[in-house]
Image (cartoon, rainbow over all chains, first blue to last red; front, side, top):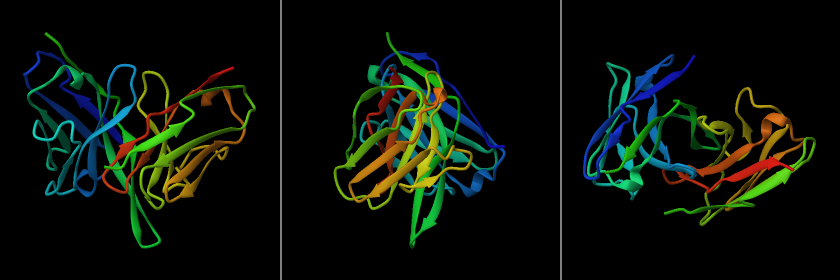
Length: 125
Length: 106
């Protein structure tokens, strides 16, 4: 059974830094791309970042580009999100998710098929 | 960037009702469209991927259709456990979520 557990969420001051972790189990972590998605209190889902299976390719939403860095350690089955220059609008529950995919009509369609329970990041003075 | 819209933003329905939620992309995304269900305090759950493929374990009352820019999620007969918020998501260019549709009890 796939199991994703996020940790590292905390109360941090504006301008500060936090590193989130996502421990993976129940699947071959090194074979899958991974993603971070966040949800501000009472708001919808916002995609934050993604990383390829090898870690060679990374992607970011414009709202976090230049401030957040996604990485992974395939030997430790762990995904990370380094968050710098935190702002009040970064306050959210942060979820990690496995990126699944399927081949349909010569194209690979990606989706988020397994999610962690989330970790809360609060940015406030 | 690809923008996603959903309509309605909320709806009230009764058990047994047929419910339809629409999602529109700002440009053609072929069939790179997924649907998720989220209940309060819980992580989202994948329902439909590639516009119309049912994720394993998801009840057959859920179905998806569409391609290009216009997509639909249909619940054929609403069950009590279906009251939740539903999000569409494009995966044509990285990921973007729609704003969500909250389905509550009439």
